Length: 148
Image (cartoon, rainbow, N blue to C red; front, side):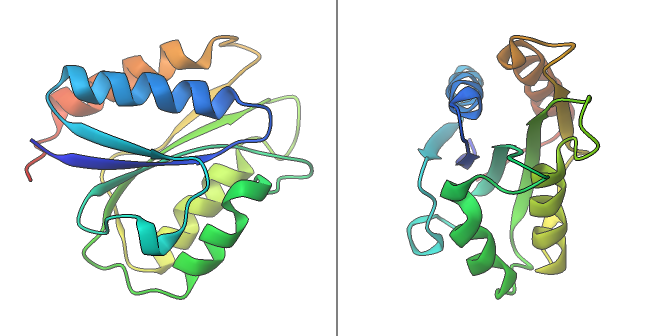
């Protein structure tokens, strides 16, 4: 089956829990997944499907652990890369899921292909974001053909 690289942007750990649940879901579907808590472009397989899982910090900022990675990919031509995005945020802020939107725009500008519309989880409506993220990924995996 397919290989996934889960790239995590996290401040307080919620994105890490979601990444773990997504990795388990991928495994249950016969896919492999590596989780990157301190992502570095040189260590991430560009032939795999990237699954960006990030929260938003401060005034719409990327979490500290993913900022350097975002700068690295902004300088690349990733026209062979396929990716998915899961963002976590709080809709009471006007910067709801800005980090996920930033990562999506950065990857699209690098010519990567978004395989499915991003999921933006509102933690006000989904206090356990893993549940909605797993449901979303199950649906993506059922509706999309992933090959090695």
